[in-house]
Amino acid sequence: MPNPLPDTGDRIAKLLARAGVASRREIERMIADGRVALEGKVLDTPAVKLPNLKGVTVDGKPVAHAEPARLFAFHKPSGLITAESDPRGRPTIYTALRNALPSGTPRLMPVGRLDFTTEGLLLMTNDGELKRAMELPSSGIPRTYRARAFGDVTQAMLDELIEGVTIDGVRYGKIEADLERSSGRNRWIVLTLTEGKNREVRNVLEHLGLQVSRLLRTAYGPFQLADLPRGQAAEIRQVEVERFRKTLTKQPKSSPGRGGGSAER
Image (tube, rainbow, N blue to C red; front, side):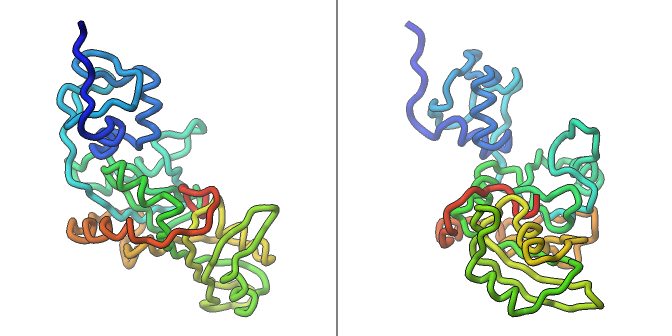
């Protein structure tokens, strides 16, 4: 009789995500495609539990032991796709990261996404579990943006966003928005939100009659863009990463809705 598969430990998708192979969802697709094997046997279910990744291969290659979770801040410039490749041939964040990261850096995955023209703080991690936890709408992690927009708006109009707003049948939750400064009809507005629905910042400001000409993310949770130069990356200290990770289970839940990507796609 063939040896039964182990039934103790963590699910293989969780272990592979923690090792930085891909996100859990992507790993489940890889297993369905027959790309993951254990001791030479191709797996057909992500429900397999293992104490570790010994004997596991992906595309025929052994999987390295999981490293501690690492987190990098990357100042994404405008004009880059948040993806590994683009069918239209546009440059991706990995094009810039090749020069921004030190040699020997493990494979990194973006936490959420920033649109092609959106700039600013993009967090990158080698840990699929951390990535997933930070992207979940239920985590309620605040993201802060600075938007340059053209048009007329008052602080009173922005204050109403604290109650949320419904646009074309989509409900957007609480948004804290402050009119930072004006020059003619150009406005700089600072917005903090927790949901991360598709193109949330742009949709809300356009609903107020504004035309967004520039969008910059300045913070994601406790992590700040600060004075990190455009196109550069910096590793966040391990102690800060672990401290933040412990808070994830304590975050207040945001209002239900689709999310998990980014507010500015």
